Length: 263
Image (tube, rainbow, N blue to C red; front, top):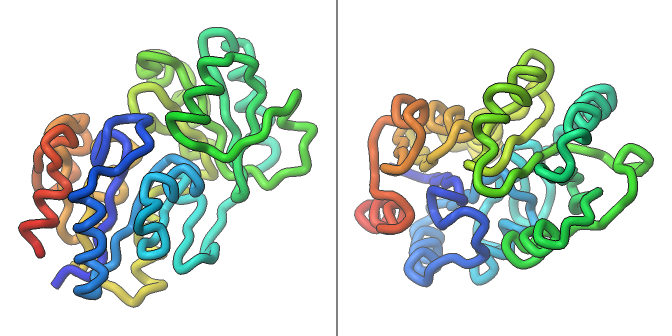
């Protein structure tokens, strides 16, 4: 009996950086609640962005956001994992020379801090992701509890991320691809899989009672933490190997179709 369903959003449930959930999925979440099954949105996005995607059922679901650095349920934070100051400083020192071709966004539990003056990027996080954010001159001068640093490159950041950014920090923090255009940095303990296990324990739900969906490297831990796991057809190979099964991608509403069959 499945009691908890966790799904990544971008590239798994909907197209990357889009703000809206299709109506069938909204109805599926409502039916899951009626049957006592908890749906959890598990994303690298911030809480406000994810809540906007699920705005019609926002109070009916659990949230694993910022790749697991921030977990919310029933209107309250149940887990927050901040980054170490020296790691934040080092990562931003590495990323700032790439400003112009890359942009950064630094997350706190209450919203994000952005150093960029790139209007196209500002529009993306405003109207694409619907982020709550504040523009600042220097993130490091702010008195903020930072839980994630993310770097964005339009089109793809994968080659730069996998060759340079991730290797430079993989032994100090959790550094991973979070979609084709994003690399995320969090505390070393942060992982969607660890967050899902925390939520399972919090709710009293077992691994064998959990279903999960994903497509990118930051979803691998979640695949392993669920008794029944699905990689969408468009997922990277590492996720497909970690998942127990394959389902159609977001363009064919694979998550919805799988949940519909369960219901």
